[in-house]
Image (cartoon, rainbow, N blue to C red):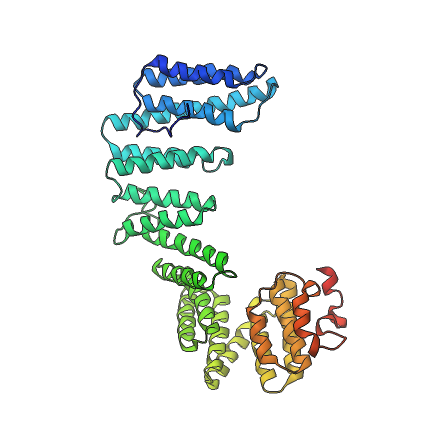
Length: 438
């Protein structure tokens, strides 16, 4: 019969012969020539010793290992392979034998918090081994059961359990389940001064801050998932990620989030709100001495002031950016600055200056291997070259997700065909090898 999920919460009734019988039933499942059937006595010895010492559920966990091995470990009749597996099995089972005995000892002594902490230790012990992560999941679930049974959910150990299990689910790319666990951990930790690692005061951030930080990262991944398919859910997770970033109390995280959220608001036409976000991002960039972020916030503030038709403030910001980017003309900040002044030159009829600015931006993005940005700069230059419908298509291009070389993007060629001559901007003599190098 199929085994139920074993664990320290599963009440198992039976005698030692019953365990041995279950073990013996596994033997016929293995083919006659398989040398790994010799491993059965090893499992039986550990299971029997656990059972005889009163650790019944630990004994049944050994049965689960046998069933899992039968389902997932490839068959072999090569003695050298089997010897290596037997050695690995001994190491694993020796660890589990000692760990299960200690955990169940805590349970017998009714020290339930220590029991759950020990189960969490076992779960985390296998995280770095891709072939044993299924054991981690097993012990996370056992520990969560014990938290519920012993009413430890609202204590620090309960929040810590959900935090670590949530991070495990993130690594497994089960984002929806991860969010559920991390949000529960967050709700339990609000208002508490718990540390992520117990008894480590120095360098150990508050649990609530770390959970909010991880939620920010997971919500951001959900944004990427729905960016092209579901605008409403994209906006929902963007707002959730921004809220989590601000509440993480981590300045560098909030700085990035205010910048990204400001870009979203700017794109939505909420220019004043976007400007406030950029100002908040600037404050945090300045406090963390992130010079590149300071430069980027100035560029975004200049763009917002331009949309608000507050040109004096816009020019002031552009002058600051020019000074900041003068040190190095091979940075992303310098390229963004060139794109913005290219747009301004175009709108004021200075087409040659606009094309030169877009060309400088393109060259920097090319060196930085920012292909989508490079394509954007190429298209802006082409539109400036064609001198028509720049504003309309500039907005379309900014929203476009360009993931392939210009020469392969048929839609972009259709977009520009009517206003670009036979010598496209991006294929002039200075960059004639660009598309071939892609």
